Amino acid sequence: MDFNLTEEHLMIRDAARDFAQTELLPGVIERDEKQSFPDELVRKMGELGFMGVMVDPKYGGSGMDAVSYVLIMEELSKIDASASVMVSVNNSLVCYGLEAYGSEEQKQKYLTKLATGEQIGAFCLSEPEAGSDATSQATTAIDKGDHYLLNGTKNWITNGGRAGVYLVIAQTDREKGHRGINAFILEKGMEGFDIGPKEDKLGIRGSDTHTLQFNDVKVPKENRIGEDGFGFKFAMKTLSGGRIGIAAQALGIAAGGYELALKYSKERKAFGTEICNHQAIAFKLADMYTEITAARHLVMAAACDKDNGDDYTRSGAMAKLYASKVAMEQTVEAVQIHGGNGFVKEYHVERLMRDAKITQIYEGTSEIQKIVISRSLIKE
Image 1 (cartoon, one colour):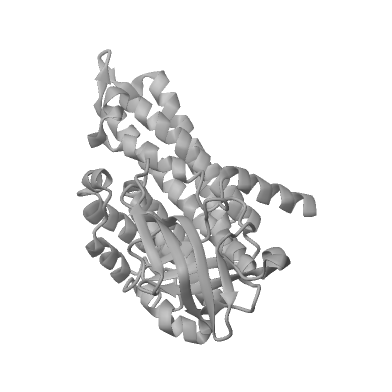
Image 2: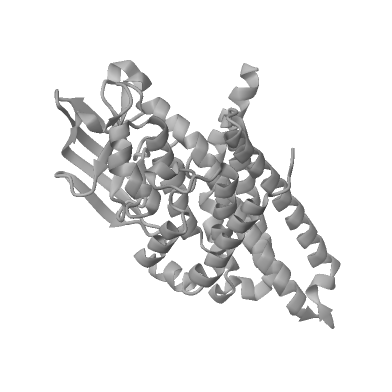
Protein backbone atom coordinates (compact mmCIF):
# COMPACT_ATOMS: atom_id res chain seq x y z
CA MET A 1 0.00 0.00 0.00
CA ASP A 2 1.32 3.42 -1.01
CA PHE A 3 0.80 5.92 1.80
CA ASN A 4 2.20 8.83 -0.19
CA LEU A 5 -0.31 11.44 -1.35
CA THR A 6 -0.19 12.68 -4.93
CA GLU A 7 0.45 16.35 -5.74
CA GLU A 8 -3.25 16.71 -6.49
CA HIS A 9 -4.19 15.21 -3.14
CA LEU A 10 -1.83 17.59 -1.35
CA MET A 11 -3.36 20.56 -3.16
CA ILE A 12 -6.87 19.44 -2.20
CA ARG A 13 -5.85 18.92 1.41
CA ASP A 14 -4.19 22.33 1.57
CA ALA A 15 -7.23 24.03 0.01
CA ALA A 16 -9.50 22.44 2.61
CA ARG A 17 -7.09 23.36 5.41
CA ASP A 18 -6.92 26.97 4.23
CA PHE A 19 -10.71 27.22 4.03
CA ALA A 20 -11.08 25.74 7.51
CA GLN A 21 -8.55 28.14 9.02
CA THR A 22 -9.66 31.31 7.25
CA GLU A 23 -13.41 30.79 6.89
CA LEU A 24 -14.55 28.26 9.51
CA LEU A 25 -12.37 29.15 12.48
CA PRO A 26 -13.61 32.74 12.89
CA GLY A 27 -16.96 32.53 14.62
CA VAL A 28 -16.89 28.79 15.30
CA ILE A 29 -17.40 29.25 19.06
CA GLU A 30 -20.29 31.66 18.50
CA ARG A 31 -21.92 29.30 16.01
CA ASP A 32 -21.68 26.49 18.56
CA GLU A 33 -23.29 28.63 21.25
CA LYS A 34 -26.06 29.93 18.98
CA GLN A 35 -26.57 26.58 17.21
CA SER A 36 -26.28 28.24 13.82
CA PHE A 37 -24.40 27.84 10.56
CA PRO A 38 -24.51 30.58 7.90
CA ASP A 39 -25.73 29.79 4.40
CA GLU A 40 -22.83 31.87 3.09
CA LEU A 41 -20.32 29.26 4.26
CA VAL A 42 -22.36 26.46 2.69
CA ARG A 43 -22.30 28.38 -0.58
CA LYS A 44 -18.52 28.79 -0.36
CA MET A 45 -18.06 25.08 0.29
CA GLY A 46 -20.13 24.45 -2.82
CA GLU A 47 -17.95 26.79 -4.87
CA LEU A 48 -14.84 24.93 -3.72
CA GLY A 49 -16.39 21.64 -4.84
CA PHE A 50 -16.77 20.24 -1.33
CA MET A 51 -20.51 19.52 -1.63
CA GLY A 52 -20.15 17.14 -4.58
CA VAL A 53 -16.60 15.85 -4.17
CA MET A 54 -17.01 12.48 -5.90
CA VAL A 55 -19.87 13.35 -8.25
CA ASP A 56 -19.21 13.16 -11.99
CA PRO A 57 -18.54 16.64 -13.45
CA LYS A 58 -21.38 16.11 -15.95
CA TYR A 59 -23.72 16.44 -12.96
CA GLY A 60 -21.90 19.46 -11.55
CA GLY A 61 -19.56 17.55 -9.25
CA SER A 62 -15.82 17.75 -8.71
CA GLY A 63 -15.07 14.25 -9.98
CA MET A 64 -12.52 13.58 -7.23
CA ASP A 65 -11.78 10.27 -5.54
CA ALA A 66 -12.61 8.99 -2.06
CA VAL A 67 -9.10 9.75 -0.80
CA SER A 68 -9.66 13.42 -1.69
CA TYR A 69 -12.98 13.29 0.11
CA VAL A 70 -11.52 12.00 3.39
CA LEU A 71 -8.73 14.58 3.22
CA ILE A 72 -11.31 17.34 2.91
CA MET A 73 -13.40 15.86 5.72
CA GLU A 74 -10.41 15.61 8.06
CA GLU A 75 -9.34 19.21 7.57
CA LEU A 76 -12.84 20.65 7.97
CA SER A 77 -13.47 18.51 11.05
CA LYS A 78 -10.33 19.74 12.80
CA ILE A 79 -12.03 23.12 13.05
CA ASP A 80 -15.80 22.65 12.76
CA ALA A 81 -17.50 19.26 12.76
CA SER A 82 -20.85 20.97 12.22
CA ALA A 83 -19.62 22.07 8.80
CA SER A 84 -18.10 18.69 7.96
CA VAL A 85 -21.24 16.70 8.80
CA MET A 86 -23.18 18.79 6.28
CA VAL A 87 -20.53 17.91 3.70
CA SER A 88 -20.58 14.25 4.72
CA VAL A 89 -24.34 13.78 4.50
CA ASN A 90 -24.60 15.68 1.22
CA ASN A 91 -21.74 13.69 -0.34
CA SER A 92 -21.84 10.20 1.15
CA LEU A 93 -25.55 9.67 1.58
CA VAL A 94 -27.46 11.95 -0.76
CA CYS A 95 -25.25 12.60 -3.79
CA TYR A 96 -23.80 9.09 -3.78
CA GLY A 97 -27.21 7.48 -3.41
CA LEU A 98 -28.67 9.45 -6.30
CA GLU A 99 -25.68 9.02 -8.60
CA ALA A 100 -25.30 5.29 -7.95
CA TYR A 101 -28.97 4.27 -7.96
CA GLY A 102 -31.11 7.14 -9.24
CA SER A 103 -32.61 7.40 -12.72
CA GLU A 104 -31.13 9.79 -15.26
CA GLU A 105 -34.15 12.04 -14.80
CA GLN A 106 -33.61 12.10 -11.03
CA LYS A 107 -29.95 12.93 -11.48
CA GLN A 108 -30.68 15.80 -13.84
CA LYS A 109 -33.40 17.21 -11.62
CA TYR A 110 -31.79 16.83 -8.19
CA LEU A 111 -28.15 15.75 -8.29
CA THR A 112 -26.93 18.71 -10.35
CA LYS A 113 -28.13 21.18 -7.72
CA LEU A 114 -26.89 19.11 -4.78
CA ALA A 115 -23.39 18.61 -6.21
CA THR A 116 -22.82 22.35 -6.59
CA GLY A 117 -24.25 23.30 -3.21
CA GLU A 118 -27.15 25.18 -4.78
CA GLN A 119 -29.27 22.86 -2.65
CA ILE A 120 -28.34 20.65 0.27
CA GLY A 121 -29.67 17.17 0.93
CA ALA A 122 -30.87 15.12 3.91
CA PHE A 123 -30.98 11.35 4.43
CA CYS A 124 -34.02 10.19 6.38
CA LEU A 125 -33.75 6.70 7.85
CA SER A 126 -33.86 6.92 11.67
CA GLU A 127 -37.16 6.89 13.54
CA PRO A 128 -38.22 6.95 17.22
CA GLU A 129 -38.23 3.11 17.24
CA ALA A 130 -35.92 2.44 14.29
CA GLY A 131 -32.42 3.74 14.80
CA SER A 132 -29.99 0.86 14.74
CA ASP A 133 -32.75 -1.53 13.64
CA ALA A 134 -33.33 -0.06 10.20
CA THR A 135 -35.66 -2.92 9.21
CA SER A 136 -38.36 -1.71 11.63
CA GLN A 137 -39.64 1.21 9.56
CA ALA A 138 -42.89 2.65 10.92
CA THR A 139 -43.04 5.31 8.20
CA THR A 140 -45.31 3.98 5.46
CA ALA A 141 -45.59 4.69 1.75
CA ILE A 142 -48.83 3.26 0.38
CA ASP A 143 -48.95 2.67 -3.38
CA LYS A 144 -51.85 4.64 -4.87
CA GLY A 145 -51.17 3.93 -8.53
CA ASP A 146 -49.50 7.06 -9.90
CA HIS A 147 -48.17 8.15 -6.48
CA TYR A 148 -47.36 6.98 -2.96
CA LEU A 149 -48.99 8.35 0.18
CA LEU A 150 -46.33 8.86 2.82
CA ASN A 151 -47.02 8.94 6.58
CA GLY A 152 -44.67 8.80 9.55
CA THR A 153 -41.90 10.45 11.53
CA LYS A 154 -38.14 10.67 11.05
CA ASN A 155 -35.79 11.67 13.89
CA TRP A 156 -32.34 13.23 14.24
CA ILE A 157 -32.18 14.29 10.59
CA THR A 158 -29.01 16.22 9.74
CA ASN A 159 -29.72 19.18 7.42
CA GLY A 160 -33.37 18.61 8.36
CA GLY A 161 -34.36 22.26 8.29
CA ARG A 162 -32.18 23.67 5.55
CA ALA A 163 -32.29 20.84 3.00
CA GLY A 164 -34.17 21.17 -0.26
CA VAL A 165 -34.02 17.45 -1.14
CA TYR A 166 -34.80 14.58 1.23
CA LEU A 167 -34.17 10.87 0.65
CA VAL A 168 -36.79 9.09 2.76
CA ILE A 169 -36.88 5.37 3.60
CA ALA A 170 -40.38 3.96 4.15
CA GLN A 171 -42.29 0.68 4.36
CA THR A 172 -44.60 -0.14 1.46
CA ASP A 173 -45.41 -3.79 2.13
CA ARG A 174 -44.96 -4.89 5.74
CA GLU A 175 -45.56 -8.56 4.92
CA LYS A 176 -42.38 -8.56 2.83
CA GLY A 177 -40.28 -7.27 5.72
CA HIS A 178 -37.13 -5.45 4.61
CA ARG A 179 -37.90 -6.43 0.99
CA GLY A 180 -41.01 -4.26 1.19
CA ILE A 181 -39.05 -1.07 1.97
CA ASN A 182 -38.59 1.72 -0.59
CA ALA A 183 -36.56 4.92 -0.90
CA PHE A 184 -38.17 8.15 -2.09
CA ILE A 185 -37.10 11.65 -3.07
CA LEU A 186 -39.08 14.38 -1.33
CA GLU A 187 -38.82 18.12 -1.74
CA LYS A 188 -39.21 20.76 0.94
CA GLY A 189 -42.62 22.38 0.68
CA MET A 190 -44.57 19.29 -0.31
CA GLU A 191 -48.04 19.42 1.23
CA GLY A 192 -48.19 17.51 4.51
CA PHE A 193 -44.40 17.63 5.01
CA ASP A 194 -43.68 19.39 8.33
CA ILE A 195 -40.33 20.17 9.94
CA GLY A 196 -40.16 20.06 13.74
CA PRO A 197 -38.11 22.27 16.09
CA LYS A 198 -34.32 22.17 15.96
CA GLU A 199 -32.74 19.69 18.37
CA ASP A 200 -30.67 21.13 21.26
CA LYS A 201 -27.62 18.87 21.10
CA LEU A 202 -24.50 18.07 23.11
CA GLY A 203 -22.20 18.53 20.12
CA ILE A 204 -22.16 19.48 16.43
CA ARG A 205 -24.50 22.22 17.59
CA GLY A 206 -24.07 24.29 14.44
CA SER A 207 -25.51 21.52 12.28
CA ASP A 208 -29.21 21.53 11.51
CA THR A 209 -30.91 18.55 13.20
CA HIS A 210 -34.71 18.17 13.18
CA THR A 211 -37.59 15.74 13.46
CA LEU A 212 -39.61 15.45 10.23
CA GLN A 213 -43.31 14.64 10.08
CA PHE A 214 -45.13 13.28 7.03
CA ASN A 215 -48.92 13.49 6.93
CA ASP A 216 -50.44 12.09 3.72
CA VAL A 217 -47.60 13.45 1.59
CA LYS A 218 -48.19 12.64 -2.09
CA VAL A 219 -44.94 11.40 -3.61
CA PRO A 220 -44.94 10.94 -7.42
CA LYS A 221 -44.14 7.42 -8.61
CA GLU A 222 -41.11 8.75 -10.52
CA ASN A 223 -39.60 9.84 -7.18
CA ARG A 224 -39.04 6.25 -6.05
CA ILE A 225 -35.38 5.25 -6.25
CA GLY A 226 -34.81 1.92 -7.97
CA GLU A 227 -37.20 -0.99 -8.29
CA ASP A 228 -40.00 -1.72 -5.84
CA GLY A 229 -38.52 -3.12 -2.63
CA PHE A 230 -35.02 -1.74 -3.22
CA GLY A 231 -35.14 0.73 -0.31
CA PHE A 232 -33.46 -1.29 2.42
CA LYS A 233 -30.61 -2.36 0.16
CA PHE A 234 -30.29 1.25 -0.98
CA ALA A 235 -29.98 2.43 2.63
CA MET A 236 -27.38 -0.18 3.57
CA LYS A 237 -25.26 0.39 0.46
CA THR A 238 -25.36 4.13 1.00
CA LEU A 239 -24.51 3.91 4.70
CA SER A 240 -21.44 1.78 3.93
CA GLY A 241 -19.91 4.74 2.12
CA GLY A 242 -21.24 7.18 4.70
CA ARG A 243 -19.21 5.42 7.37
CA ILE A 244 -16.02 6.38 5.57
CA GLY A 245 -17.06 10.02 5.72
CA ILE A 246 -17.87 9.86 9.44
CA ALA A 247 -14.62 7.97 10.10
CA ALA A 248 -12.78 10.86 8.42
CA GLN A 249 -14.77 13.31 10.53
CA ALA A 250 -13.80 11.45 13.71
CA LEU A 251 -10.18 11.42 12.56
CA GLY A 252 -10.28 15.18 11.99
CA ILE A 253 -11.79 15.87 15.41
CA ALA A 254 -9.07 13.77 17.06
CA ALA A 255 -6.31 15.39 15.00
CA GLY A 256 -7.67 18.85 15.76
CA GLY A 257 -7.55 18.13 19.47
CA TYR A 258 -4.03 16.77 19.22
CA GLU A 259 -2.74 19.78 17.29
CA LEU A 260 -4.19 22.17 19.86
CA ALA A 261 -2.77 20.11 22.72
CA LEU A 262 0.70 19.96 21.18
CA LYS A 263 0.74 23.71 20.60
CA TYR A 264 -0.48 24.44 24.11
CA SER A 265 2.05 22.08 25.70
CA LYS A 266 4.88 24.01 24.03
CA GLU A 267 3.61 27.32 25.42
CA ARG A 268 2.33 26.51 28.90
CA LYS A 269 4.98 26.35 31.61
CA ALA A 270 4.89 24.49 34.93
CA PHE A 271 7.71 23.79 37.37
CA GLY A 272 10.09 25.98 35.38
CA THR A 273 9.69 24.48 31.92
CA GLU A 274 7.16 23.96 29.12
CA ILE A 275 4.79 21.16 30.07
CA CYS A 276 5.69 19.15 26.95
CA ASN A 277 9.05 18.51 28.66
CA HIS A 278 7.33 16.65 31.49
CA GLN A 279 7.13 12.94 30.82
CA ALA A 280 3.47 12.77 31.89
CA ILE A 281 2.51 15.15 29.07
CA ALA A 282 5.09 13.93 26.56
CA PHE A 283 3.79 10.36 26.84
CA LYS A 284 0.22 11.57 26.36
CA LEU A 285 1.28 13.30 23.15
CA ALA A 286 3.08 10.16 21.99
CA ASP A 287 0.00 8.01 22.58
CA MET A 288 -2.28 10.55 20.90
CA TYR A 289 -0.15 10.78 17.78
CA THR A 290 0.19 6.99 17.53
CA GLU A 291 -3.54 6.35 17.90
CA ILE A 292 -4.44 9.09 15.41
CA THR A 293 -1.94 7.78 12.87
CA ALA A 294 -3.39 4.28 13.19
CA ALA A 295 -6.88 5.68 12.68
CA ARG A 296 -5.73 7.62 9.62
CA HIS A 297 -4.35 4.44 8.05
CA LEU A 298 -7.68 2.67 8.55
CA VAL A 299 -9.60 5.58 7.07
CA MET A 300 -7.29 5.82 4.06
CA ALA A 301 -7.44 2.06 3.53
CA ALA A 302 -11.25 2.19 3.39
CA ALA A 303 -11.10 5.13 0.96
CA CYS A 304 -8.65 3.20 -1.23
CA ASP A 305 -10.97 0.18 -1.22
CA LYS A 306 -13.76 2.42 -2.49
CA ASP A 307 -11.54 4.00 -5.16
CA ASN A 308 -10.30 0.59 -6.31
CA GLY A 309 -13.81 -0.78 -6.66
CA ASP A 310 -13.28 -3.28 -3.84
CA ASP A 311 -15.86 -4.12 -1.18
CA TYR A 312 -15.47 -1.49 1.52
CA THR A 313 -18.22 -2.69 3.88
CA ARG A 314 -15.80 -4.15 6.42
CA SER A 315 -12.99 -1.62 6.00
CA GLY A 316 -15.44 1.29 6.30
CA ALA A 317 -16.96 -0.18 9.46
CA MET A 318 -13.50 -0.79 10.94
CA ALA A 319 -12.43 2.76 10.13
CA LYS A 320 -15.52 4.27 11.74
CA LEU A 321 -15.36 2.01 14.81
CA TYR A 322 -11.73 2.78 15.53
CA ALA A 323 -11.57 6.43 14.47
CA SER A 324 -14.63 7.33 16.55
CA LYS A 325 -13.07 5.61 19.58
CA VAL A 326 -9.85 7.55 19.01
CA ALA A 327 -11.78 10.81 18.62
CA MET A 328 -13.52 10.37 21.95
CA GLU A 329 -10.44 9.24 23.87
CA GLN A 330 -7.96 11.72 22.44
CA THR A 331 -10.16 14.78 22.75
CA VAL A 332 -10.55 13.90 26.43
CA GLU A 333 -6.74 13.84 26.62
CA ALA A 334 -6.55 17.17 24.80
CA VAL A 335 -8.78 18.71 27.46
CA GLN A 336 -6.62 17.12 30.18
CA ILE A 337 -3.42 18.54 28.72
CA HIS A 338 -5.01 22.00 28.72
CA GLY A 339 -5.88 21.59 32.40
CA GLY A 340 -8.34 24.23 33.62
CA ASN A 341 -8.16 26.03 30.31
CA GLY A 342 -9.43 22.89 28.61
CA PHE A 343 -12.74 23.42 30.37
CA VAL A 344 -13.06 26.91 28.87
CA LYS A 345 -14.72 27.45 25.50
CA GLU A 346 -12.12 29.83 24.08
CA TYR A 347 -9.52 27.03 23.89
CA HIS A 348 -11.74 24.97 21.54
CA VAL A 349 -10.88 21.51 22.91
CA GLU A 350 -14.02 21.19 25.03
CA ARG A 351 -16.11 21.66 21.86
CA LEU A 352 -14.09 19.00 20.03
CA MET A 353 -14.69 16.62 22.94
CA ARG A 354 -18.44 17.24 22.75
CA ASP A 355 -18.43 16.85 18.97
CA ALA A 356 -16.49 13.58 19.16
CA LYS A 357 -19.25 11.63 20.91
CA ILE A 358 -21.70 11.66 18.01
CA THR A 359 -19.21 9.87 15.75
CA GLN A 360 -19.75 6.77 17.90
CA ILE A 361 -23.50 7.00 17.36
CA TYR A 362 -24.69 8.24 13.98
CA GLU A 363 -24.57 6.32 10.70
CA GLY A 364 -24.41 3.16 12.78
CA THR A 365 -23.37 2.99 16.44
CA SER A 366 -20.07 1.40 17.41
CA GLU A 367 -22.02 -1.71 18.40
CA ILE A 368 -23.53 -1.91 14.91
CA GLN A 369 -20.06 -1.59 13.35
CA LYS A 370 -18.97 -4.62 15.37
CA ILE A 371 -21.94 -6.57 14.01
CA VAL A 372 -20.99 -5.59 10.45
CA ILE A 373 -17.33 -6.53 10.99
CA SER A 374 -18.01 -9.82 12.77
CA ARG A 375 -20.55 -10.96 10.19
CA SER A 376 -18.11 -10.30 7.38
CA LEU A 377 -15.48 -12.39 9.19
CA ILE A 378 -17.84 -15.29 9.89
CA LYS A 379 -18.96 -15.43 6.25
CA GLU A 380 -15.37 -15.96 5.03
